[in-house]
Amino acid sequence: MNVGVRSRGARIRSAVFGYANMIPFIAFALFPFYYMVITSLKKDAELYNLKAVPFLIQTGVITDHYRYLFFKTEFLTWMKNSLIISVVATSVSLVIAILAGYSLARLRYRGVGTFGTAVFITYLVPPTLLFLPLSQVVVWLGISDTIWALIVTYPTFLVPFSTWLLMGYFRTIPREVEECALVDGASRMQTLCRIVLPMAVPGIVCVTLFGFTLTWNEFTYALTFVSQTANKTAVVGVTADLIRGDIYYWGSLMAGAVVASLPIVIIYVWFLDYYVSGLTAGAVKG
Image (cartoon, rainbow, N blue to C red; front, top):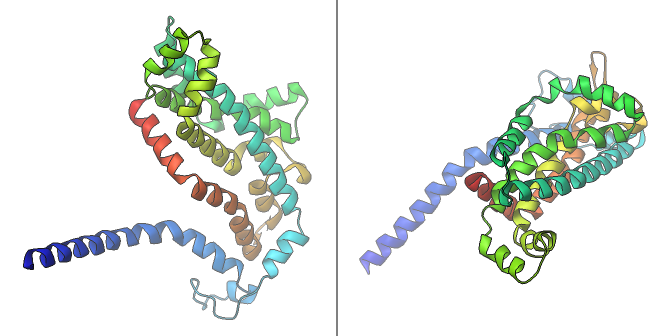
């Protein structure tokens, strides 16, 4: 009996210790979002009061900054542009990455290993080195200052990492399953679509979340290739419209940051398990 009590007490202490260790990390992760929310709900007088406590709301909650954001700016248009660009660019990149990743993981031809390494090295090239030559491509295609400029250029950095990640995940799928399908008369494409892809759902979800997040938050290309207000993304639109010279509309800026971050939060909450399993499997095997 005493042994059972001691064992239960040890488990409780271990659980308490584990949760206590998580508190600093949770606080560190949630603090930026908390600060954005309380800043977006403060009055301007409190925001610019140097004696006010920056981490608390002392003079009452207001929603004026959200009303200004939705009714006095083109924020909803920017959100729509971000959604269209992120969905289309991620979908195109995903299709290319699936075909390239499966080819590099399963097919055997001269230089396959070198190609796989080159794909990953391509991802390591900083985007700031690419936007100048890509701007010439955009002008040559006649799509400058449109959302298509971003849809065309975003796969240049989405495809390499997505391909590398899917290569690792495809290698975790047993070859015997594909060989059985090939022996039964299925073509390589049928094997990919009917056998491999259903088994690779966690990896595909991981790549999709990664691509969507990266395109949603991308700033350099969106700032360089698009200047019309109606074609801007949410990240660039909020920054450009609510920062005027040395005047910062902090309340509306934080309101925009809160609303723009909600789609990312929602999709990660829904697909967190798939994301973790796909990322760890691809990273370990690749």
